[in-house]
Image (cartoon, rainbow, N blue to C red; front, side, top):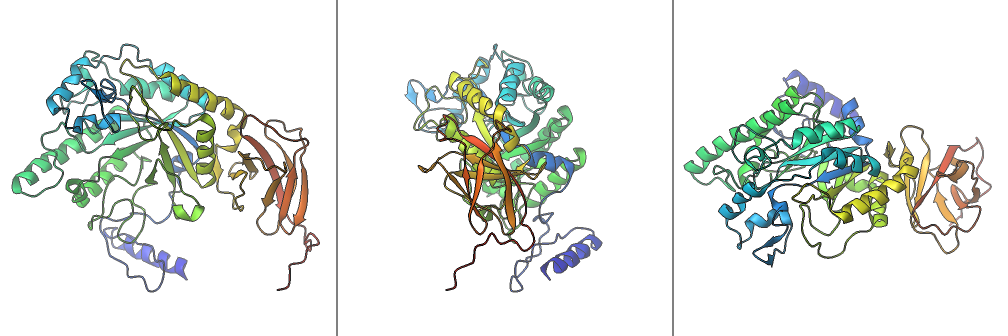
Length: 482
């Protein structure tokens, strides 16, 4: 009945010209708020561009800009925050920070080298900061002087980077901060007529830069927005909605996350009816959902730092530094819950990547070389999670992958299959000739026995080939009568 009602509502909205969009009905008692600037679609996008995004599995984030020069330190004092936010520190004057443009000269920047590192790591897409909150543009924008063109380096950063990653078969997403500390027309809130006049100029500036990016770098697959939480932007529901429509018309297939805009009631990510605005949820920053119901059937990705909270380059990483195995487990968990995992890199001011990042990228890449089949085109498998690790189902082959991170002392791995599913074969992904014993220990419950006691140094993957339980077959187990 719910599906029929949704179809009727959607068709009615189409007949009305689409000015009011259908909203999800979760129960007969729920009051639907009619919105002009809420979600434009219920459920996932089903086109080829979004299917490609959904299949990525592993991505890379790059935070690079003027903030790499102070690297979390100013006049000998360490900033107790993320390096890219140092301009907001009371110890730093805006004028002194902005003058860093005259020191930005990454003579060792080699986009082909960056792309090669990403390729070896197994990355399928990269998100690069075209402009962070400080307003400094890594492309020669004609709408501001605060760009790489006016630095000692002078040359475009984004164009060569897009070309290098495209050459490696890695899709590019352009990060763009709406919040712009350098622009005098930016406001955190709009309280006066002068604020309104200034912010109207800022909105046109933002529109100009976004259309410029999409025109100059047409192979980019999407936009990753940031700095949209302040009241000034939240109040621009109609403008942002119109701009999103304009960008999608200019760039068919463009992928935009849930951070870009709010609805007319100020709701971000999810509109006032609880429906996702955008093509995927961007709320999973440095955190991962615990269970499939947490993502509400939406596409999503997790963006993750190596230390606790450093995006741009910092001379010293504070706190716990994640290991390759920890990052691989995060990757497995994300894909097992229908998401992508995106690992951040913060290049140095000279344009090179720090040694710790290169080491982690190499370790992840070595693992991916053997096990990438379990990550790419992966989705939620529908199995009950076990303590040893994660299940991932392949959309390409329907195989089930067991990504094992914690081996029980017994050495055997418990598997509880969905009802009426039987395990036909189990073997190691790194050795298709291996044949692990599959022992049924109860109804839809199995033990997988590797041929010998496993003492691996790295997480490993077991492939399960499954089939329908034979008609009338129950495994000989009777449920307890209670």
